[in-house]
Length: 514
Ligand code: PMP
Image (tube, rainbow, N blue to C red; front, side):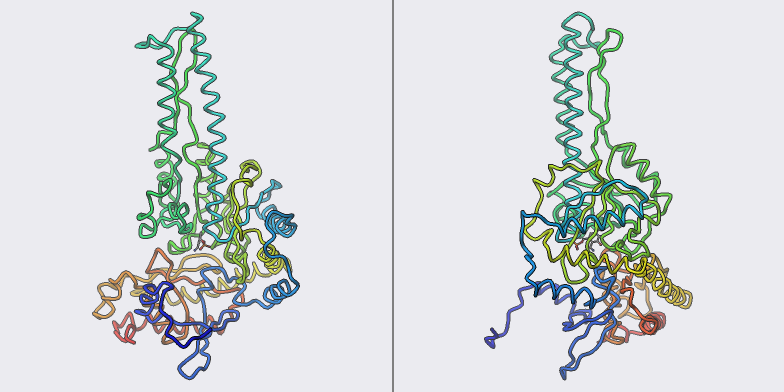
C-alpha cells in the first residue's frame, strides 16, 4: 500500500503541532503494563514509564496478558461480533455481574438495568436520555392531573358551586390562561445540575455538563443547559435550585372558592457528579456533600447520575468510588477500564424505579453491546473480582505508596508545589503558579495556558516518563498508573519529579529548552 509518496497530514495536524511545541509528538509502537515504547533514530526501542494510564482506561495496564489472550481467542474462534437485534446472553451476563458488584457495594437488592454504549460520553448521554424520557412521562402524569383539576373547577363554577377568584369573570378564559402559562414554562425545557470542574464528555449533550468553558461554550446553543455549582457546597446547590421557578399552576376549589395555586414540577432532568473529579484537577467529593445531594435530589425529584467513568472500576480501592463516601445514584456510568484496554465499551446502569423500558426502542448503536466488548468486559470483571478483590486492595496499596512519595516532594518543594489530591490510583499533584518565576523562559511557559504540557514534555524528554495534566486544570499533573506499577517505577517517577521541581525552584531555563 505504500506508494512512496509523502502522506499529507490530515488527522488533526494542528493538534500534533501543538504537541510538538512541548516535545510530546512521539509515536509509540509497543506497550505492556506501565511501559510504552518508541523508536529512536537507530530504530531501537526506548522504554517510557506511562503514568497517564490511557486517561484512566488502563487500570490493568497495557496489553494485560489474560485479556489479550482472551480477545485473540474470541476473534480466532469466529465470535459473531456484530449480531445486532438477536439474543445477547453475554450482555446479560455482564449486566448481571455488574449488578452483583453494585448490590454488594451499595448494600441494596434493587435491580439496575444496563444500556451498553461505545464510549463514556455516550453512556452519559444514554443516562440523560432515559432521565428525560422518565421526566416527560412524569410531566405527562402531572399535566393530566392538572387538567382534571382545571376541568373540575370549571364544572364547579358552571354548576354554581364555586366562585371565580377576584378579577375573573370567565372560567374558560381563566382555564386557558393557566394552561398557556404552564405550556410556556414547560417549553423552556429541562435544566441540569452539575459541578464546577466536572467533566462528563464532549459530545453535543454531554459537553453541556462539562464545566470547562473552552470545551462547552461554543456549543451551548445545541442542547439543554446545566447550572453549575461548586463541589462540596450544599448552600450553593440549594441556591441554584431555589433560583429556578419550578412550578406549574393549577386550579383548586376550596370552600366554594376557585383558587389558582402552584404545584412543583420536575424542571431539573438530572444532577451529574463525579465522586472524584478527574479532568477538573482530581478533587474528591465529601461524604457530607454526598448526603446533601441525596436530600436535595429527593426534594426536587431529580435523579442523580454518578459518573464513575474515570474514578470507578476499582481505581480508588473499591469498584465504585462513590460507595466509599456513601454517595447514592439513580444512574451509574462506567467506561474506560471496562474495555480492558482493548475494547471500546461503556455502560449506563439505571435503578429499576427510574428505568423506562420504552427507552430500549429509541436508543441503540451499530457498535454497542457487541459480543466482543461484552465478553471482554466480563473477563475484566473476573480479573477485578479474583482473589476476593485483590485488584481493589492493590489499587489502594499502590495508591498509598504513590501518594506518600508525592507528599514528600511537596514537603521538600513548597515554592513549586501546592498539594497532592485524590484516592487510590487517581492522584493529582498541583503545581504553584510559576508566572512570576525569575526565569523568563519559565515565566513564558507558565503564562502560555499550556504549562502542564510543558512539564510533561520535560519529563518525557529528560526522564522517559509519560505524564499529563488534567484537561481542565493545567497546573495539576495526574497519576493514573495500573495496579501493577512497581516500587522501582515509583522511585523513577520520584527522581524525575524531584529534578523537575529543583529546576523550577532554581528558575533554571534548561527545564524548557530542547
Ligand atoms: N466522564 C468522565 C468522568 C471522564 O473522565 C470522561 C473522559 N475523560 C468521560 C466522561 C468521557 O468519556 P469518553 O472519553 O469515553 O467519551
